[in-house]
Each structure stands twice: as C-alpha cells, then as structure tokens.
Length: 547
Image 1 (tube, rainbow, N blue to C red):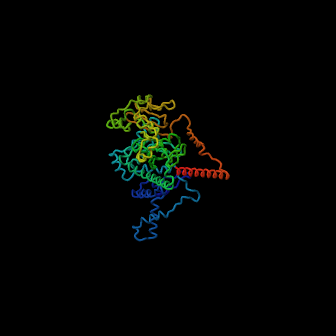
Image 2: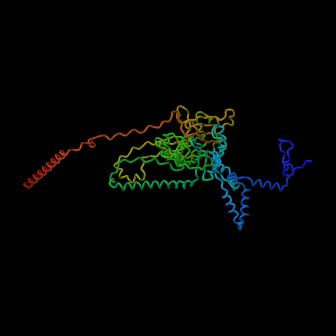
Image 3: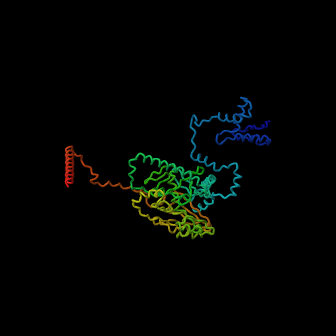
C-alpha cells in the first residue's frame, strides 16, 4: 500500500525519466494566514535594483548583531546598527577573474531619463492645481501628430521625452512662453532647442548678473590701459589721429534678434543650458564660415575668418539666422497693433504684432499655392550689419562729445547709407530664389484624403526647416545640421593681401657712415664758417659805431 505524500513533499516518480508530479501544496488549500506569511516573506526577499540587497537578509544580519552584542537601549541605536551593517557589507567593483563591465551609454541615459517618468509625493495635488492655472507648456504631442502627416519630425517616443523635459524647463523658470524650436544634429551629440520668453521683469535679474561679469572684464581692461599709460609717460603727448572703429552694439533683450531666449540640452533629462545673447559680430562671422557642431557648448570654433566665441555663440548665431529666414505663418494670423501703429511709423519699421482673433483660417489649396502669397514672415530680417534695426556708426555718443574739442581738427567721416530689409509680415512671394529654385516648396500631406490633410512648407534655403498649417493652427520646426543651402562646395575666403612696404625716400634711405678724415674736414669747414660769421658781425658793429 503506497503512502500518501505529506505537505511540501514531492511524490516519487513511477517511471524513470517521467515528469515530476505537482507539489502537494499546490493541490490543497493553504491556510490564509500562512499565505500571508509566504507573501510577506516573498516581498522582503525582493532585491533592490540599485544595490542588489534585500530587506530579509539585512534584518537577519541586524538582529543577529543585536543578539550577539546585546547593547543597552537598543531601540535608540537601532538605526545606527542598521547603517553600520550596510557599511560593513563591502562589494568590490573589481572581480578577481574579470572586471565589472562598464555601463553602456544607453543604460546611463536611461538612468537619467528615468527621473522624467517619476512622480513626486504631492504630484496628485499639484496636478489638480496646474489644471486650473494656465501653463506655457505647449501640447507637443498634438503638434507632432500634424508633423507626422507632413513626413517630418521625430518618433513619438523621443518627442514624448522632449515634452517631459520641456515640462521640467517650464517648472524651473518663470516663463510666459515656451515652444519646441527644433533639433540641431552634431557630430558627437545633438542639440534640442527650446524657445522661451520670460515673464515681465523676471529676466532683468539674469541680465544684471551677466552685466556684472561684463563690468568686471571692462574694469580689468581699463586698469590695464591705465598701467600702460603710466609706463609710457613720455608718449602721452603723442596722440594718434587713427581711431579704431567701434563694435556694433548688440540689441537689447526682448528686441530684434534677442527678442526670444533659447535653452539647449543634449538629451531629454539632461540639464537645460541657457544660450548667451547674440551679438552682431557673431552673426557676421557665422555668415562667412560653415562648421559642423560637436554637441559641446564649450568647444572652440576653429575657422577662418576667426569666429569671436565658442560653440555656444555659434549655435546662437545659427538659431537667429534660421529663425529670421524660416519662421512663417499664414496670412492674417498676425496683425499689427492699431494703437502703436502711429508711434512705430514715426520711429521706423514695426517690430511688434498681435494675434488676430478674427482669423478664420485659409483654405488648404490656397496655402499650397506655388505663388506663396498666403504665407508671411513673422520674424524680423537680419541686416548685413548683424542687427534687425540699423545702427549709425557715425552718430556721436557721450564719450565722443567729451573729446569733441580734440576732434574739431579731424575730418568728419561721410554719413553711411542706412541698411534696410523687408518689413515684418512680408509675403514669401518676395523671397529671393535659391540658385534658380523657389525658396519654398509647398505640399499637401495627403492627396487621397484632402478633407483631413494639412498644408506643409519645406524651406529650400535652410534644409530641415518646415512649417504646417491647418484651420487656425500652425507651427514651425527645424531638424537639421544648421547649414544653409549652397549649390557649390564651401571654400573659405582667401586671406587678406600682404600690406605694401612704406615708400622709400631720401629721409629714410640709409647711407654709409663717414670716415674719420671726412669728419675732421667737415668740422674744419664748420669752424671756418663760424669764424667768418663772427668777423662779419664785428665789422657790422664797428660800422654802426662810426655812424
């Protein structure tokens, strides 16, 4: 008679090589209290994803140490005993047989981006408060849906991570406007660019901090100049007439090319870094060179002509150029403010506009018209001077008026001719052709289902710049290398010609030194001439006395 297997025992197999029978405890009902014990122990045996330890083993070691040492007031020092137990368990990163494998870049990036998906303790209450308050965070997934119809953009997973990263940016800074500008591809890392605008008065604090740094540099330069002047006391009276040309000043914040502020990061989850304000000399130099970006903002820009700054300045210059040339909107979406119209006409071109609340949208076929009359530029054109508003270099400043007396003798330079560009909201039909090609290529996302299609514009001047419009919605995006189109391969400009030598003349011509005989003969002749002059003077004095 065979014996019935007890609980937790496996019945012996009747045939060799046959499948073992199911454990007995799986076939019978377990006491609910025992099941709770089993579940609790299984939970405590769960290992940590960071250290690999589990709570069950740790508590076993702590209790063993307490029972072995039996310290006084255990309840007061229990936390210290637990911490010492963790510190005593040392795990070396180097194995005796094989070193620990380094984490791949994908694993490191995943650990950084893991924070984007974690919720805080008060997130549920904060989410309810954020729903009631207006946020500057755009609906990036909705915009990405339309760009997908146009065949541009990035995959949804990457776009969602960028959306979470932009949420961190909005939560970290006082912003009233934020949008996804695009992605610039680099050789080592890429740049994800966010275009923002601070709330009124919030940006002044950051500008003051930057101004203090610039002021310290100017003070150091002045001190060096004063030391040089003290060392050259003899040359103080020698003032050259040449005055070096002054640098074109940068445009103030919230105006011109510095109207918006830009943040960049290499990957979603990494810290956002604010780009510096753009200067005209940086835009002028960026137009003369063509460089691939590395993805490191502190990388030097080695080029000819030399670029005045590092890669952060070059990225900012390219963003300003691309925005000025490719940011477009449907005709009638924006309009000029009637209240400021008269003031702007007196002071020059208009710089500000407002959204037209009465805009009803433009039919799809009209937006895709090759005539390009239903799209306009809503970012100011950058002049050859590197500014959106021309600055007169001849106009006198306060420093010039102090030295006005010294400059009276100098000739005043001729008044330069002001530079002008197309005004705001200029139609795309006035854009210049790109090597016999139209500047833009209009397209409809779907010709088979036009009732749900969107109108798309692709820039031929800046490959990678795109825009879409449907009903009352539009958006611009740039995904590319940051290079302007050129039909020929880039070649750097030639070096400056070698300066000519100073013209030779008798006043600077070198001659041979005289011989001792020639020197003595010259001295004798000079002495004879001096004696003859004295005799003549004495003769004239005697004649005067006789008279």
